[in-house]
Amino acid sequence: MNHQQLTEPGAYPGLKVTLHDDGILEIVIDNQQTLNSVDQRGHQSLAGIWRDIDAAAGVRCVLIRGEGRGFSSGGDFELIEEMAADFTALTRVWKEARDLVYNVINCGKPIVSAIHGPCVGAGLAVALLSDVSIAARSARILDGHVQLGVAAGDHAAIIWPLLCGLNKAKYHLLTGEPVTGEEAERIGLVSLCVPDEELLERAWTVARKLAAGSPSAVRWTKYALNNWLRAMGPTFDASLALEFLGFTGPDIHEGLAAKREKRAPRFADDAPL
Image (cartoon, rainbow, N blue to C red; front, side):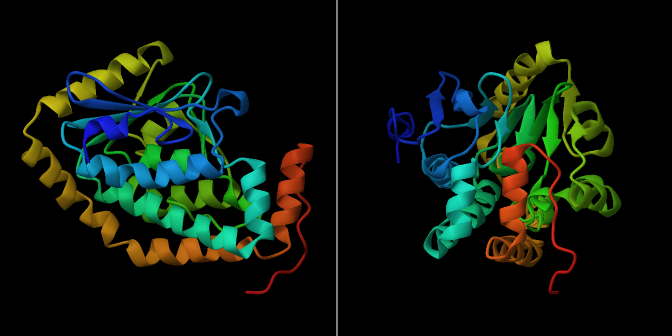
């Protein structure tokens, strides 16, 4: 694949893709009406683009960010409803969710994420799996799966314990307590935290440094380090399967209704284990 195909308008719905002169590919999650939520086509784009980037000549580094007021507010309600109602849709999104994580891990090009405002769902998976994650102080990192009534799948089990330790991972994943940019840096969940006004400048500085480095040295170092994540593949696969099993149960409907009505969910007293 050549870089012209990557940057062709409409090639990746929900994403704006630009290749700059220094070989840095800028990806912008752009759905500002819903705070960069990820719909069906956007989810497909986020899952598939990394394989294409890996194969594209002329790309030396990737910088991903969100447009407007936040990085991404996660999957939109219509996509969640479709998954809960349609087995075909559920299996399609399961495959995309699996591919998203493994494709980011296996993409040879270094990835920098610039995180501000809300960062949830598939966007959060990409942000934290990036090789260098830079958060603004305004960042609000949230894995809300349990609040929605499904297990924390996506990326959580594969990387949160490695980044911030098992106890912190359990606390935030089981309670749904959000993490600020400063707290995320303190516990090791992100690489750096900077003032909001310095976020893009710092992210571009890091991206340019990576782009200027030896491609083989940078990419092979990334490959070796990511074996820590590949070793956790079975744990990730189990978490993703349990998350999607939850979309077939009753709690997802109550969790989604609570989100729509902006209230606390009232889940059933008992659940099969």
